[in-house]
Image (cartoon, rainbow, N blue to C red; front, side, top):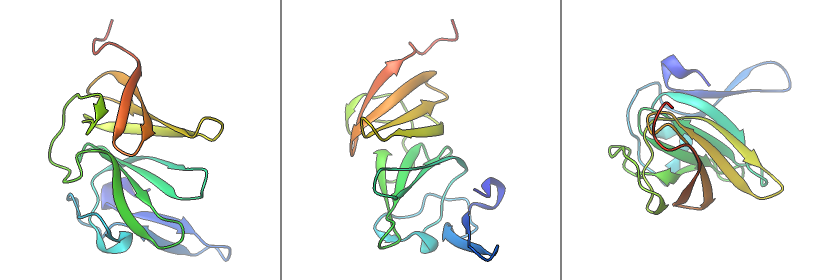
Length: 140
């Protein structure tokens, strides 16, 4: 991830960089378009799911997005799809508040999200459904 330039690149077999997501503009880009045509916020975490799709945590846009391995289309899978509403809500239509690092557990098909400003570890159970698995929102 090229966090400061709002882009995600892949390194090809011949050592070249290939743009995977982002336009170089820090913004909350739309869903259901080519990932290379959608602006992204600060990316602090990347992971791959069990199908080889790229998962991207957009910290400033308070969401996690999926870039399809087969189509290159980007869509929000956790947090506010518009990328403008940060907060704390568990369950369906969950809200995140500056997700940073993410990790995918292939055994349970669970995406874990370090939700920085909520001071919680969250788990994405299915698209849009998030639950807190650790933390209580305080630094203690």
